[in-house]
Image (cartoon, rainbow, N blue to C red; front, top):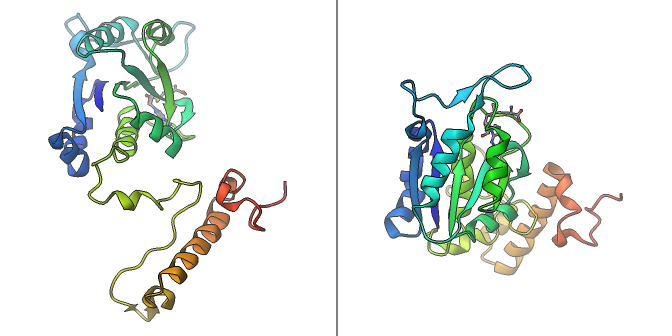
Length: 242
Ligand code: SAM
């Protein structure tokens, strides 16, 4: 999976060189290149923003540096990349979307700042490559960089070979629409709190049944909005009546 990221703060993306994403890069599973948008501005101050037409607060990112940056990056690889633009007005990043991103061989991420990027950049880009606007959630960040870190991490950990133990992906929250069961480690007793005895029983079937029940209860308690969508809950009395 190749990820080209365009930002006015390239240093913001440095965590991608750490931990598992860093290892994935060294293993050749993930290729990351970060490009400074200001390299595509031509004035002395390397300006990338201007005042909004129609008035209003804040600044808008100019189309010219964005287009030159996108054309430059698009020329660096083979085939057609998908342009991912983080934005609070996009489809929300879910595990399903992360899986779709993990299937993309090449993505360009365009990190907006200020009030966002001139709309004509989206229109022009859509004529030459697929464009997806993706939101981290229903709140507003200062820029797209944090969202891109989340998107790449969520997608890259689904790549075969990324996780040391691929099994840890199987029962994770959101894989089948349910949240994960509670987890415990040693010691069995801590501050007078005991690990649930079933987990010490050695009975794998009982452990599996307990974990499944915990997933259902936890999802019902914390994320009732997920219940209707979850096939795992169909027909159980945990699904509230509409
Ligand atoms: N004026 C824009 C609006 O109201 O939709 C918000 C602009 S925000 C201050 C600047 C940039 O942060 C956006 O262009 C986008 O790249 C990023 N951003 C903000 N919130 C985001 C979110 N929830 N998900 C993904 N990116 C976000």
